Image (cartoon, rainbow, N blue to C red):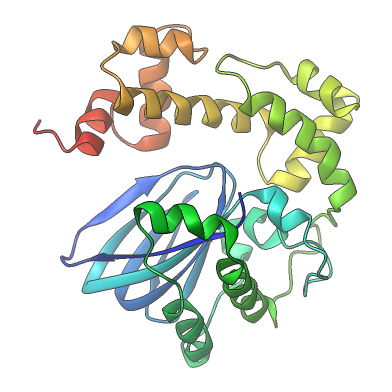
Amino acid sequence: MPVLSLRHGWDRVGQGTFDMHFAVELGVVLSGRLRRRYRGWEADLSPGQAWLIGIWEPHGCEVIEAPCTVAVFVAYPSTLMHLNIPAPVGRSWLLPFTVAPAHRPQIGPALTQEPLRIGRRARHLTGADRDRSRFTPEPAVQMLELLVHLCRDWQPPASAPQGTACGYARIDRAVQLALGVAGRISVAAAAGAAGMSRTRFQESFHELMGISFGQFALRHRLNGAAGELVRTDAPLKSVALHWGFTDASHLHKRFVQHYRCTPSAYRRRVRGEQP
């Protein structure tokens, strides 16, 4: 998936979303104010200020000043890792998304005009337009512009890994293995796919992706279960077994931990059904 962009808005204080996805996300507030929460970190953002979301990172937002509009860019990690453009931080384009939230690049109130200009160019895409955007370069250019601005004076933690496209290529074999099945994948199987020892694989995976392989695989299965809950009327037990959970209670527990609601409540909310 190349970079995709979209614009979204809310018209009332208290509205918001909670989500988790494989693609990394870069967003900027265009109007109003938005409270972002993820991994125990919280920030109130004003127009021109941005946020970054990592791989399979549970995250939410709440409007604190309406109306509120945002521009959002999403990209698969491999898209950023294989860019033939030197990253301004001297590491990788993926690094700003994988360090701890408190260490990610921020935009101060005095430096918001350029992010606003870039964000306002993001198109509002729906339906066929969104499909066609897969083949246009504009979102990628805009996302890179915003990343460059964000990282201009950013200093990553000294302990942050270097990360290379070559190293990612090996890890990506395990990523594709996990994404290709609904059931559980052992660390040993993933390490074998990457051609590494188990210990080296676990270290390399966490360095590059910002989460452990176990977390990655679990969140992939939770995301798959969430999608099946919305698309089908299958009972929770069958959804749980299909996605590698021991039983319905196991899925229920993990689902609440990551989505902050029960599977049944999630199904009703996304479908727009009454409780």
